[in-house]
Each structure stands twice: as C-alpha cells, then as structure tokens.
Image 1 (tube, rainbow, N blue to C red):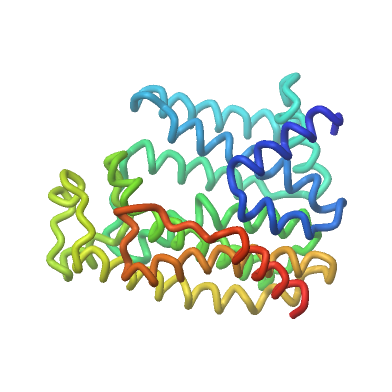
Image 2: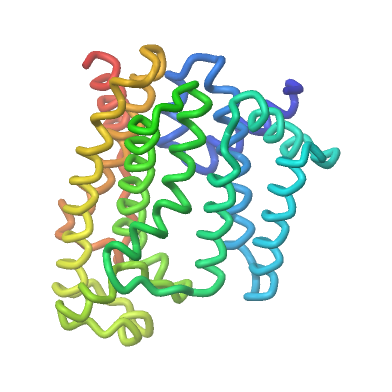
Length: 280
C-alpha cells in the first residue's frame, strides 16, 4: 500500500470505530495493514447505504458494491486505491467470495427495510453484515479451520447484536427496528407505534435487555475460538471483544434504555479493558 493510502485507511478506521481502532493497535503489522483495508471496504459499503438520501440511491450503492466485488474476484480492479488494495488482500489471503457476497446481501436487506420476526432472522442478518467480517479477518490471520471460522463468525454476530441493542433509538429515527418482532409482540410493543414515537418505556427496555442476554451467549461461544488464533493476534481480538461487550453493560446500567442516548464506553474504561486483554 502507498503511504498516503495507508494514512487514509487509518483515518477511516479511527473515525468509524474508536473501539476497534484502539484494539487494532495490538495487531502485528502483517495483520493490521490488511485489516485496515478490510475495514475501509466494509465501512464504505455500509456508509453507502446508511448515508443514501433515498431508496434509489441506496439501491445503487448496493449495486455498486456488487460490481466492485465482481471486479475484484475477476482480477479487474479499477484504478482506485481501495479497490486495488482489497483485491490484493483477497488474492493474498484467499478470502472466499461468499463472505463479501453475503455482506452485500445484508446491505440489500437494509435497503429493503426488512423486518426481523425472530431471533434467528436477526442472527441471519448479523451473520451477513458482521459475521462475514469475522470470516475475512480470520483468513487475514491465516486461519482457515472451519471451527475457528465458525467462532469468528460468532464474534461478529455477537458484536452486531450489541450494536442493535445500543442503537435502538438511532435506528428508529431512520425508520428501522431490528429487535425481533416476535419479542416485541410478547412485550406488548407495537413496532409501528414505537417507530412513530420512540419512547424508552419498560417494555422496549425489556426486549433490549433480552437481546443483550442472547449476545452474551454468543460472545461466550466465540471466546472458544480466540485461543486458536495466532498468539500475536489473540490480545487484539480479545480486547475488541471485551470493549464491545462492555457497550452492552453500559446499556444494562441504564436499565436497557438505548433510546434516550447512545451508550458509549469511556476512554479510561476502554484502556482498562485493553490492559485486561494484554495481561490475561
């Protein structure tokens, strides 16, 4: 990668995810550089949909992502620094095409404003938009054992479930509600009424806390795979896991309210969790 391009990728990671940026500093250079490329590629795809001004623009962003994936896997990357860098990572680490294809499908589900009836439906979405990132990262760490890949997928899913629990209020402002509708009905929450007037009442908070409980179970399963990663990569992944799951703890301390304001882990707490990961 050109120095200027790497600086831009670093800036993208720092701006997009302060938590992951902090944890990524623990990665060895051989893994961190391609990680910057993966993050920028996935972040660009996500922002293309989230920042679209209308459904047509969002649809075009998904189509552009699929075209980019097609070019990369055909070794026909455009003269674009990120696209060429992603193609190089795909080629070097034998990243299976199914991973970015599933990512694009998850983005399409956002464009379609898909609702998730059950937890399994939501997990299928999380697998696409986050589990695939875990798969690609594990290939970059040069681990391709199916069990290790499955646990990496679990970690991505758990992080996305945490995202959903954290962003209930922000998502509602975009007309999105990712919480399982089956659970909402069980808690006597009318999805359309909540989207029309997002209020952190006891019912919506109980569903949010229930989702965090499910995320905890997936984090526990994902933990089993960290020890199978290269020794020089484990601390970074453990740190990312601890910092991300702590977001859920912040939501819990607020009684499950992620509508009034967004849960944020303070820097001192992140540094303590990183230290925990390093010394464990």
